[in-house]
Image (tube, rainbow, N blue to C red; front, side, top):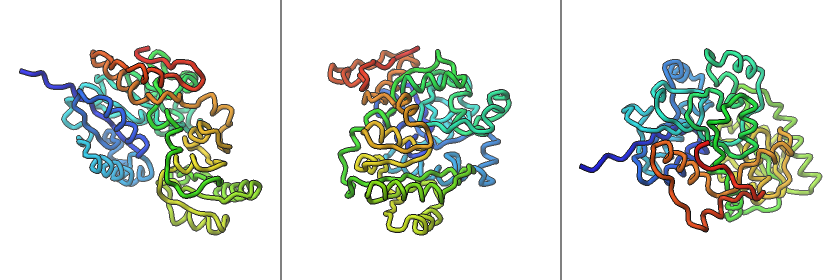
Length: 350
């Protein structure tokens, strides 16, 4: 009798997180694969039912968006890994850790940029054995230590996560799929070129403070100084009517896009303005002028490895954890493992 293929559970979240999981899954054709929207335990379910998670990846809105993506791409869904017969789990965020992952091999995959350390971050660091990670936002990403391996975007991020308290022995610099080849976004059909692009955030929806008026007026000033058209790309998790009304008031004449590929818009712009968005890395990777909440020199040190191999490298980590041989690369593929600075990323078990 032929042995049944090993089974892998992919825990998804935002579209960015979900597309990364999809790309990793595509590199693992020899395994059974199932997907699920983000989920947690009973406390998580209670908060979700009360609407407290609605503007997070645990809410109904983003959960539906994830399910629509899975359906559109004919990906098998097993909500919450309910059959509990998976051999390995991929997780997009350990701020919530489902109990059915305990005792199972697991891989945490970095999504992109993490939030700056919040006022609750020191409290979580001190009491992380009893407090949930989500109280500190994504600045607590990786601090649960519940995972077996942690795939990160760059050497710079490995150092950052280690400085926050993540176990260096668990981290592997693989690159991450949506940010390991910024050049690919230059091939697009977005109609505008040479403009100032302002990408808004959903910080107000997740209960952070933002002076949106100042942010908009600063964007107008930057565009005027460069004599460029100002274009806004709104975050999909925002309250769009409010955001568009504010732009009409404080940035009249600006173009507003509520959908479309933000990465392709970045590829066509001359100047990028954002706050906490990982899109800053696309801008830096393509040599754009970038304005960010974070220090741009610091972002350059954290820049995701441009190896075009993130999904393949992460897939090989899974194979090693499952006791299977890593996939051999062709010479052409191997060359793609060289990032732009000429230093090979660390691949395989740490």
